[in-house]
Amino acid sequence: MSATAPNPGPSPIRRPLAAAALLAALISLVFGLLLAGAGPASAHAALTGSDPSDGAVVDTAPKQVTLSFSEAIALGDDSIRVLDPSGKRADTQAEPRDLSEGGTVRYGVSLHSGLPDGTYTVAWQAISADSHPISGAFTFSVGAPSETTVALPSQEAGGGPVGVVYDIARYTAYGGFVLLVGGSAFVLVCWRGGATALPMQRLVVRGWLALTAATLVMLLLRNPYTGSGKFADAFDLAGLQSVLDTKPGAALVSRLLLLGAAALFIAVLFGTYAGREDEREKKDLTFGLAVGGGVVATGIAATWAMSEHASTGIQASIAMPVDVLHLLAVAAWLGGLASLLVALYRTPDIGSAAVRRFSAVAFGSVVVLAATGVYQSWRQVGSWSALTGTRYGQLLILKVALIAVMLAVAWFSRRWTGRLTDSAVAPEEAPGEEAESGSESEDASADVDPERAAQLARQRAALTATKKKRIRDADPERSGLRRSVLAEAAVAVVLLAVTTMLTSTEPGRTEEEAANGTPSASAPAAGGPVNLKMPFDTGGQNGKGTVRIDIEPGRTGSNDLHVWIDGSDGKPMDVPELKLALTLESKDIGPLPVVPDRLAEGHWSASAVQIPMAGDWKIDVTVRTSDIDQVTIDKNAKIG
Image (spheres, rainbow, N blue to C red):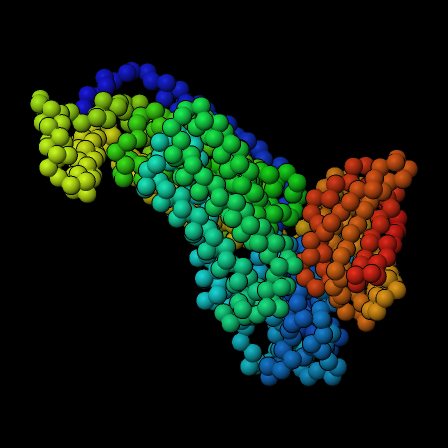
């Protein structure tokens, strides 16, 4: 029988709980203050207007249709289609023209002349700067509304069967990351003996396999997910190449490379580390694994931060490391919780010290989650109306409620942890049992062949483990802890699903802006967007073209920079290399290098470009059109 510790009265466990309650109150206050004074932020792009507008009736057919968006987007050849009442193309089917100026992002397509009266349908599809596909459709009429054979697209970009599989892969990727990172951290920080436990090894390895498989699926499906929506295009080499040239594609490839390093980490953790018996050697190896594993985990988390919401909009240089911290805290908490659940149910050896260490890790993770979550909420929501009136805001409220439920269940878990003892670690043997077992072993070694002796040894080891597990299962404190941890894990699964949904949901700020028809306007009164146009000629074949640069908001601090290159024929032009540098010669500052990421053909962007002070900045642009043909051009611009 196990000995039950007496009720210890005021436990040290309760002090962290009181701190958690105080922390929750402070977070609520800060949350309110942030939302009350929040400015706009960027994430998903949204259609903010069009000419002609949705539902408009115009007297004569326009020469072009233009669409305005809340932020920079990437468009393909067929991204904007205009269909006449019979369903035929009314536009010239040319590449959409970039008509952006100032802080307004606008694209247009030309229409055929002599269009008849009737109702026309405009369908569009694009990729926002945070890598998510967006789409929509509207109608306008010439002369008077009429019947039309065109059915408005019912499937949004990124939908259909391809979208379903892609979303499943996204959920699987997050789940795999949580198990891989959280499970490894649990073994190194909370329970080093878990390195030899087969259930713990399986948990971490399955997390690695899930994340790797999901990443491969997302890389292959990225082209059809943002384009045609057909599975066959997953194996289109040209489409795959175009994906690799984008920010999301580079992030997925980087994740695969980091997962190779993670495989080596797992091999050392459950191989060399698990086999070490010398405590000094094991301590040194623990430090090395913690540092190496931390670097790999941070790198994997950064592949999400560099390609999704955190990578675009205001304060991207702050938002990206905050997002990395948020993901690591989620993994440490939820992945550690899954590890604890497996250890309590599948292994007989975990002791109370390991459980208490995880309790401390979980509390620290919750503190980090609260702080980073408040910042992310301010960035993506921005107002009380967006918090309560948009899908993103409602999911965010649900996430906070789930965290509150988890903390409530965790309170019961900590109570059981405070009562947990290790008195049941070794099974009690009946008097004479040990001697009898010893005599049986001697008889076995004398009368039984070595193979049979080994078999008997395995049976005795299994019997001992079963006795230990049975005694542990009979411990009421341990049974209570298992039940409460299981409840926590059930809520954690739902919480992880909601968190994943948030990453693919249009943030409340942009949804509200789209509903109001107002574009993003984050620039202050001082300064303004910078627009430059510079012709270039590298001297080689097809070496002539024009570089267009937009810097927004065009002031000191963090700026978004977009570069478009048009060939001599006016069409978007890709080049092997594009570099920029900014120099403020009057203050001897610079050159400050900028290496933009390719978003689409002829379109590059860079977020969080820091302008340290106002002045007349020289902007150098280096364009390389072949292995030997390159030119550097420059132009001055007033910034700030």
